[in-house]
Length: 347
Image (spheres, one colour):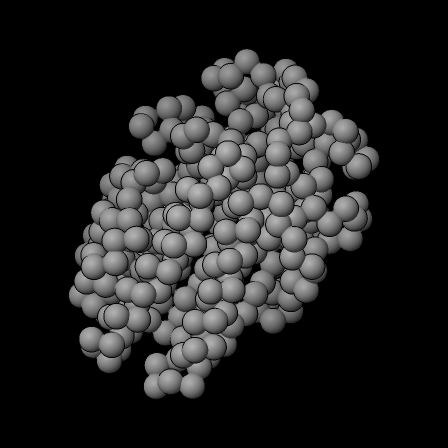
């Protein structure tokens, strides 16, 4: 089961799982997901009979429980969440309700299905975030999994709460007849698109830096707003670690395949290299050949100065490494999809 399976990262996960031969149940409320993804994926060979869509919110416990039992779900990849830092600062209760209460309902549905059937979900892979670290104030040191957790936004705090809930649930079930394996993947900045050209990144509204710059490059926006140029970084703009969406999905699949019942694991997923906003702008200009006008605005509440991953743990334990390690190549995959789909999925 893939929750949020019609969103950006979730859809790429569904695509990979289907291509690997799995049967996939997609749960999505279509708030920010795209129904067009179903049509695109169904065009691939032998997929239609292995892909099932449940139009539901994860908080709809009865529908989720029914889907788990009907399809004998063994693994859940949980992507469904609200994920805009700025929005979370403005509407924190909405984020706690959706992200935290939603997870509780999902776990309750899993537990109820287990009690009814005696079977159930044995592995749970959770979409967490580097926002759980907050702003460390250290301009140089990459963030490891044992870095102090001090999120500065409601989004980051909601994800940290979810991690703790999963840890407690895994501990509760560890000694039972039906233990569950849980893993939380702390993503850094995800970018790029499916390199076969089928799936892309299409947020409404768009808040992610690279898609916004590409909108300027394709004539949909007049300029890029740089949110702060006074950070304690070499060029004054915020630094982030960018990881290609297909590499992120590969991390999920590797975790899914190795975690054992009763385990709870946490992994950072990133390249270990940071790029500032200005460096990203230059990389986009290099890829597209288009000049990008900018305007400097104030900082966005909740944003950290720097977030770069120490991903040595997942690299060492799961032999994971990025197949698209260079930022221009990540951008090129996104630019290719934008040119093919100038109106996003609607086109």
